[in-house]
Length: 314
Image (tube, rainbow, N blue to C red; front, side, top):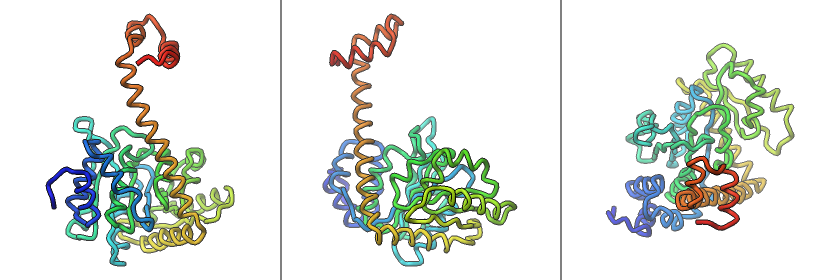
C-alpha cells in the first residue's frame, strides 16, 4: 500500500480493496484529520447494493454476541462482511472503551471480515458523529453487508434507523416497561425484533408482548418478525440472518430501498449542516466582545444571542 496521505491515492487504494488503506482512511475520517472530507467526497456515494444492518438495544442484551454470530452466518455465503461497532468513549483518550475487535476474535484470521470499533465521543443516539462518513468508506470498499452495532446507551437509540437499511432491535426476556420503549420509538424503528437469551424464563411472554404491541401499531408494508435467539450457543441466529436478508429483498422489490437512501442523504445533509454551524457558533462565541458581558454576568445569554445574530457580530 502506498504510504502517501494524498486523499485521492488513499481513496483509490480503498476502492482497490487494500485493507490497510481502508483502516487508515477510517481513522482519518473518525479523527477529522486533514483530507477527511476529500476522502469521503472521492468515495461517495458508493455501491448501491451494500446492505446496512443496524443492531440496537440496551446494554447487556447481547448485541455483540449476536453480531459475532451473524457475521459467521453471513460468511457462510462466501461474501465479505464489515462490522462498525460504536463503543463508549474513554474519558482519557477519547477512544473506544470496549473495542469489539477484541471481542470478535473468532474472525481475526478471516480476510473476509473487517471489524472496526469507533468511539461515540459523547454523541447521543447510539452512533458516532463520524459513523455516516465511515459507512461511506466501508461501502466503497465493496462490502455487500455492513453490520452497525450501536453503543448500547439505553432505549433511545433511534438514530440507527436513519443510518441502516434494516434495523434489528435486540431485547431480552423480561425486557421491562414496554410502554416506555414504545414511547422512545423502539417499536417504530425496528424491522426485525430479537428476544435474545431465550433460554431464560420469560422469553415466551416477551415475544407475545412484542407481537401484541406491534399488532396494535399502524399497519406497515413490512410486518416485523419477532424472533428468539440464544446467541451464546448460536441458536436462532440462522433464522435471524434469513429475516434480515428477507427484509432487504422486500425493500428492493417495493422500491423502498432507494427511498430510504434518499431520506438518509437528506438527513445526513441536515446533520452535516448542524456540525458546520456548531463550529461556526463556537468561533463566534470566542470572537464576540459581547461574550465577556455574559461571562461576567452583565448580560443574559439569550439577549446576547439575539444581539450577536442581529448584528452579524463575529
